[in-house]
Length: 137
Image (cartoon, rainbow, N blue to C red; front, side, top):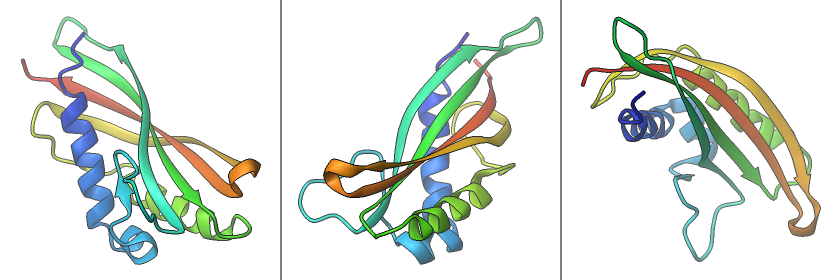
């Protein structure tokens, strides 16, 4: 197994979300690896947890990554957050992303979980994508 493609995959997903017209129309550049301090937008996107498992075989080194992208919003109701989640799903599902290391074989939407964080009056949607990568090392 190689975890070597992880940074390249995260970077490609981040760049794809920033470059997507649908996502940027809804959140601008509010796509974060880590939410910055200070004033944050009412609705933003964060790159979240990742799980990687070995998918190597006799032909090469590879991994399956489960990547979470989250939408967080303090706007009442779920409509705003769901609109952003739809744009993210459209941008990433079956996307043909170029990685600086390795090759993306497939990127697919797997599931979404919408929840309320009552104490902070936030809406949150966690989208999980499955990525199959090959590492050319």
